[in-house]
Image 1 (cartoon, one colour):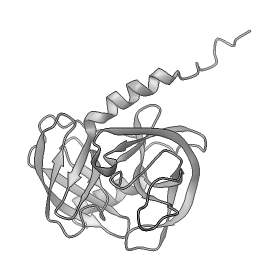
Image 2 (image 1 turned 90 degrees about the vertical axis):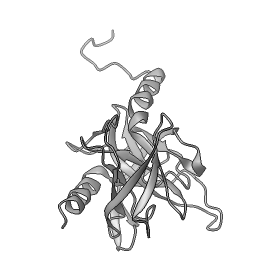
Image 3 (image 1 turned 30 degrees about the vertical axis):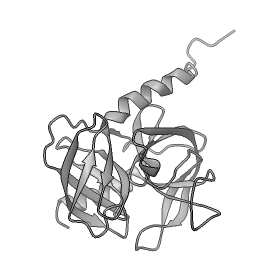
Image 4 (image 1 turned 60 degrees about the horizontal axis):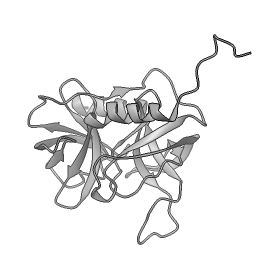
Length: 209
């Protein structure tokens, strides 16, 4: 007999709902040097992305899922943590993603990577959390702890959210392991900055610290 108190298994179709809920908060980030991803993370419509995505830029363009294009100021970055904060010209209609700041994911948890790999905005890939606290060199700093995932991450995904199956952001996609250093590409080993670390760095940037 089935235990009526046991949690119901999540159906495959539920991930479609998760993606639909998170996508409006995800943006493409365009600079003079290239392109990446980001997501709205607070009530003012500010965007969190990777420092290496906006390196050398004081202003960028963000493209929303509805096709709107907005100028955004780079209000600061933290290269050691590979985090940057953008402030779009308007926060109207920008809804923040829900952040999973109350706990950590577990190895084996389902996750979705959302962003604009190779400029393909609104791309969603799925996988699991493969490891926690993986030492990875990020940005200009030394090795820092990162989430490892087998969700497909490719150039252009950097700065986009890694979300759990409740639609909460657990990390910022930031790096991949690859066998071809020239062309890159996913081999099922990607890394994300834990969302708590990223938000702490973002708050320091916003506070001017």
